[in-house]
Amino acid sequence: MTQPPKPADAVRAFAHAFFEGAGPALTTLLSRSVTIGDVNADALKPTEILAQSPLPWVLVECQYSRGVAGKHWIVMPLTQAAQLGTILAEEQGETLPGDLSPAQIDAVTETINLLLSGAAATLMPLLARSVAFSTPALSVVTDTNDLPQELAPQSSAWVWVLRARATAPGGLVLDVAVTVGQDLARDVMVVSAQDAAVPATVPGPASAELPAPSRLDLVMDISLPLTVELGRARMQIQDLLRLAPGSVIELDKSAGDPVELLINDRPIAKGEVVVIDENFGVRLTSIVTPTERIRSLR
Image (cartoon, rainbow, N blue to C red; front, side, top):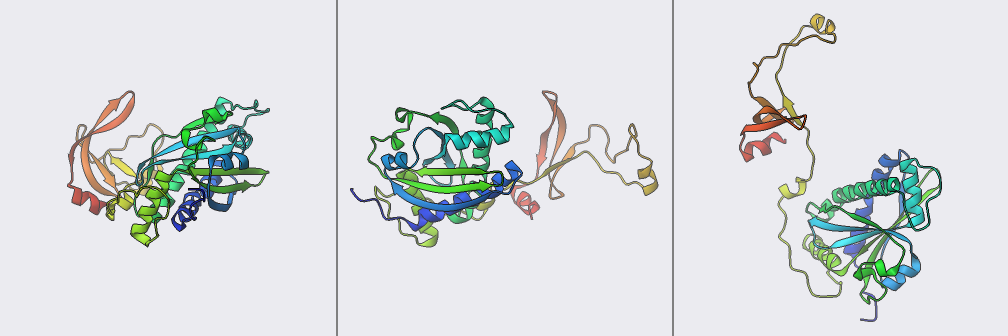
């Protein structure tokens, strides 16, 4: 194939959904307002990607573990990644050419984890299923021989490149590219086509159809506060005002009685307190049925 594949609406929608959560995630991380703009998706050859964004790169491989099949690579220019790492790590001084300090690597890795967490949330409505990632692998690439096969200049395969630019007060500019291989692009199109009648036009063999998700699948990644209740007590206001360090509050349970686990103030299980490596834990002794647990979420 000598011509690039026609840009697919599904991939463009995927790009916008992926970067939708990046702004809030970076705003929280940097404690400054971050704007995400210039979002686009293009099909390029690896040589074109390298021409547009020369090495060195910070390259992060991200494997999907749920929702869709395949993986993508997050690409950032090393100089910009070093600037981001310096801000987050609060380090002074210049970064050595072609390298990041351990503190900067930790800071950039934390940034990527937040971006993926935000992307998982914003991709879920688009794909109509929950999305999860395996632990990302970060590396600094200064030589084309160290690139993965799919991004090596010798490869003739087309790669979807999703780009966005993050800007923030203080002169921070971060160009982020997400390179998507054909396997993942096909899967995104197939999944999108099932729910929105988007034609799957990416070249290559057709991907196997994935089963339609249940409504419960869409909320499986939502976090809920879990409360362990040792007991309860009622006190008069005058007694409450007399409380001081060392005061003892008598609960309505005896020592050794099981504690209750609550979600949304509704009991879902009972257990006993245990100590694990100097941390407290709860060993479950009884638990309500799955149906009752679902009802407790309402």
